[in-house]
Amino acid sequence: MDHFLYKNGALHAEDISLTEIAAAIKTPFYVYSAATLTRHYQLFTEALSPLPHMVCFAIKSLSNVAVLKLLGDLGAGMDVVSGGEYRRARAAGIPGERIVFSGVGKKRDEMRLALTGGIRQFNVESEPELRALSEVASSLDLTAPITIRVNPDVDAKTHTKIATGKSENKFGIPITRAREVYAEAARLPSIEIIGIDVHIGSQLTELTPFEQAYLKIADLTHQLRADGHKIRRLDLGGGLGIPYSRSSKAPPLPVDYGALIKRIVGNLGCEIQIEPGRLISGNAGLLVASVIYIKKGEGRNFLILDAAMNDLIRPSMYDAHHDIVPVIEPTSNFKATVYDVVGPICETGDTFANGRPLAPLTEGDLVAFRSTGAYGAVMASEYNTRPLVPEVLVKKDHFAVIRQRPTFDEILNRDTIPPWL
Ligand SMILES: *Cc1c(COP(=O)(O)O)cnc(C)c1O
Image (cartoon, rainbow, N blue to C red; front, side):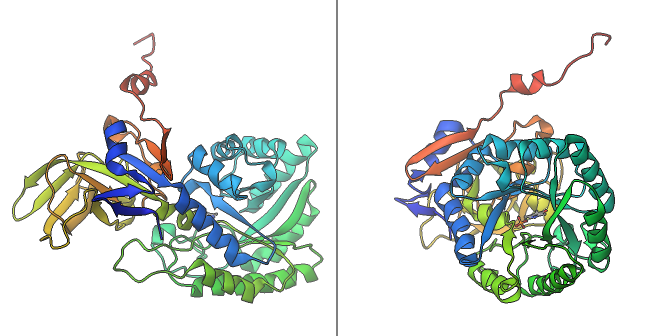
């Protein structure tokens, strides 16, 4: 469910017409609904209650500081995967005790930043990382709270680029070697074992892979406790999928996911932590663009937009489908026109959709890509020297630009010509 609906003939974000935002800041832009973000966060906390739990938003999916502040004020923790994301979480006012540090390639200066700034846990992904963390924490006279991310060798049944829980993926420590690595962690100075971490992939549309992984985590909890480790927190990762198309089968709901967690690991006496990104942010955002031209090709119509693959890369990177809707509500009996929807970038990969039936459009019309709150703005670039796409947050009848579009002066001033040239 989201808060992007037609009212008085125009698509709105909550109580603000997208035509109003477009007039104020020009297209393309992303727009997020505070009500949708709030609701999705709450669905998870409700699904896990009454278990002791923390929902840590995977901020790589949507990392604008204003969005982090909104979720942080609701009590959310944050899952970060870089020193930069750690800084974002802190800039949003999130205390270190609510920040989890994930990722396979944490550098020592990032470890130092998190240890001195405060951290809930490091999700350690390898033995070399474990040793480095022990050294860094010792040198600071601090203790690093850790879980070890185990790779349960489960097929998440999702796009190969975002499956992370098979033994051939780069993530985590093979579950078969977990006891050995926990034993090493227990021997190392300045390391405190808190629990276990697992994350098997993104955009999962079935519960079975989660069930397979969590059963293995439950077994491992018993084994590690028998080995003498204190396992008091289970971080079960993110990855629950969202509906990208109104016509496709809906993925499982957070309430069913929560019931599965309770059934499989609810009786272990552990605090439960999850790291959802996409389900909180995905359907809370739209990318709004204008039609520049409609070009007739050989047997096709190209709808050329002012948004491109640099603004939204998911279609070219993951073959992702995004529903595209006109901002001005079409009449109920419109006759669809079939378009290839493309951006202005000089690559054939700059295609959002092929053969997409849409309400007839003309130059200057506004369109919105649905479900683009997650892995949208965060993956944007300035390829073709197209200014980084701005972001807008709406709450009821308020809207604010939460990331400005840079000026061309700002963009050009980042380059420097060496004096010897
Ligand atoms: C990407 C990622 C997530 C979030 O995945 P979603 O599919 O957006 O829920 C959570 N945890 C880790 C470790 C990740 O890499």
